[in-house]
Length: 324
Image (cartoon, rainbow, N blue to C red; front, side, top):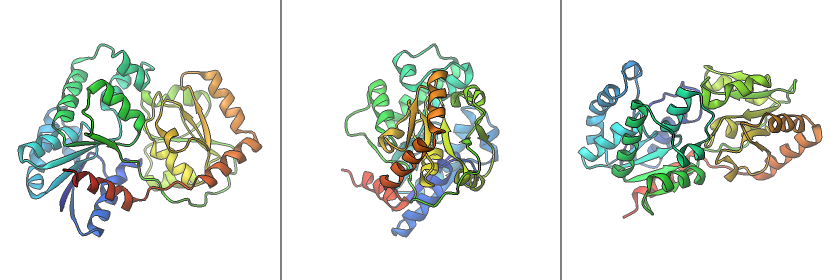
């Protein structure tokens, strides 16, 4: 097959999603296919919403024409122009749903502490931009051939709200690396890495003096993860954070928002908390600082033996296209 992968990120960006296009392309090529990557450049990053979608649509059309199938690695930035291009040229397209652009846009605009399930259960009043995102999301769902979620948690939320047809979606787990040896922490620090945006519950992180890493290369983040005491995410919702998965690969336990699908993969090895409950978070931090408790979670992670390498992940995407 000739496979086009579209992404709004580059390998230099922080976080696991930025590595997806490159690693998937390598695995497809190793399996005898030919892959091509179309990503956002400097122009798309400065254009306003709508215009950048049109620009990217025109930019990828020749590559869509070349391809047998398209994989879009998000639902809005590249998802919408990719699905329109694929439909225009009658190519198959799979959309990877790894986040929620509508919820993120609303929470980051209003700074309202809404979890993902609550947002969809009682959707608040949206501004014009968010209404456009909602409309485009519905178009994307109706036009895409298939939706690949990384957790059942989000899949169930979307299937309920957007009325996604049975058989049009499945879970394709995030990349889970093999276990590596982490360093011994010289201080009992809790590490968080990501973008400084409201949905990450930044105010709460600052209350607990969490070590915060932002805007650094992925390799540097991994170095800090190896040496930390534990990883932490207190986001209002964090669907399946690669940052925590990478911490686990180094044997680092975690404190994690309970509004997540990560507990489907790692039910043990850390603590899940209400991200809006300061007292509950305080107790979790105190518990993790106890040597016996910390060592217990470290041992649980050693026994988990969970992995999901890139070659398996690529094969799961290929299996989607084998469907009648």
